[in-house]
Image (cartoon, rainbow, N blue to C red; front, side, top):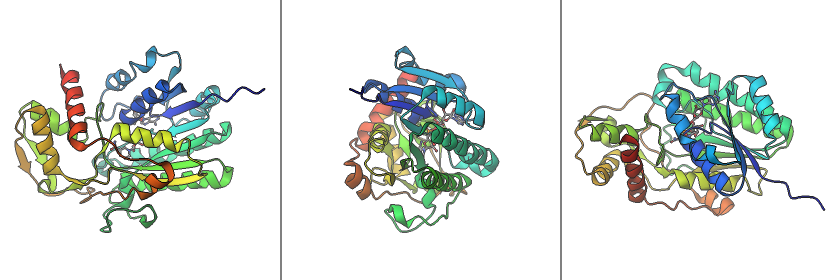
Length: 322
Ligand SMILES: NC(=O)c1ccc[n+]([C@@H]2O[C@H](COP(=O)([O-])OP(=O)(O)OC[C@H]3O[C@@H](n4cnc5c(N)ncnc54)[C@H](O)[C@@H]3O)[C@@H](O)[C@H]2O)c1
């Protein structure tokens, strides 16, 4: 009798905020996991990323490979060695605003690096789950965003690289017949959140007694999604019956920046000093996910209320800072 095939995951960007949370979850479920990550220092020091893997590194099911998706030979070798059944592709230059000043760095990683990842995935014959973004919808006024309304009109180079990424993933599926899942993530937050993202940077400044910059007068709206809910959706996508599936992963619960700040004040027990400023180029007015497809195809539901997620994030941040 044949042994059942063990689930083996290869997580690019596995030392990142979402990637490392996914890694921990997969190990808990008995997957063998290889995290492949360049420990990119452009947003914050590599030591911070390595700390995310402290728990995983204690597991015999886990292996960390430091490598760069822009090096086709390197990722090909790492993947051939790991022989994954599923590749979760989360390696990217993330963040909207820095992409305005350095778009080529984003194209290099999010397009060229992704193509190398796809070629390596084809070599091992694995399923691919790709982390796309709500940024692909740009400033489309028709909200909530439904997957099929995407028009290819992003508001930032970052969004443009995610549109290109989705197109490359589809081309890979057509060429190889291998199953793919595209998860369009909506403003993910929670423990380990990148320090450049609004919730993290606001919380740190508030705890330091420094003013926070509320662009668009704090009237912008985001569909904040708790990281464990996002990870649940990614894990479900790895087992979806569909050969090709594109879904929004959002909370279906748009929240104004001002309300987010009030939640941080409550959880951190500090008052914010707000500096109201005009909107920034590249930022969109609002994100709001229609999640009917995720509910229908994956039986997925966002479970963590915003105030609970902010409490968990605040507890983690206080521990990190002490
Ligand atoms: N955080 C969000 O709100 C959000 C929203 C939508 C989509 N996403 C997407 O989810 C994914 C993970 O985002 P995150 O917030 O965890 O970001 P993150 O920066 O914490 O994680 C990305 C990881 O990729 C690694 N990396 C960067 N370039 C690499 C390369 N060339 N080769 C190998 N590794 C490389 C980095 O070192 C980092 O650990 C990204 O693809 C991002 O675009 C995130």
